[in-house]
Length: 242
Image 1 (cartoon, rainbow, N blue to C red):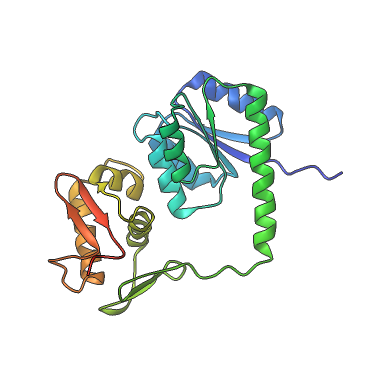
Image 2: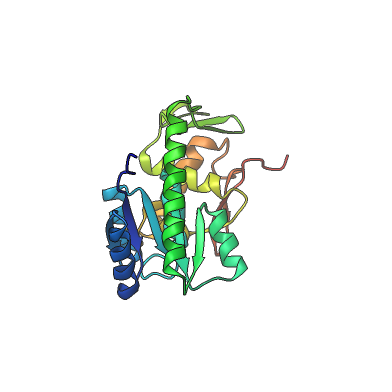
């Protein structure tokens, strides 16, 4: 019988004792592991290693786990993510599921159950990859008003004609679209949209929104889609009232 190939598993957990224990037991199962003890390092390692599976705590220094989850899902909707958290209230679980987590295990947890969940998520991801390889995926597009964004080519058709969008513009657009109808704070836009909170300021967010309005609004000074929410930040609505 052919053995399953080993997986690279990223552990983002601020408790060093728990992280070391998970890494040891996963390595005993034949997997490679890499660990981060804060949010920004976790995002950096995700971008660097592109792991096969992620184990994610919610309460992390720097950037919280839910913001990390949102940031990853903007670029990768398929990598399995298992949340381990002491925050086990139903509202926290619902929020995690709405952001795209695959599984949720409350602390304290049973090690055998954790390993079984990792195995299940890994096998499901393998099956999904094989199925996807035999199917032509539609080009991911999003249309609102007279605007169309093609996230695969990075181009858009808008009032200015056909334009090319930068990677950061596409990332912010994905974040707005994924949360359409929901207010997003500048802090959340910075954490999820840029992946860190240093070296950029809330003014950076404002400048990018100005650019998006210039592209997609008929009247950028009176926006219908990218709206300002006083004392909060911004909100995207794809079906503005007539």
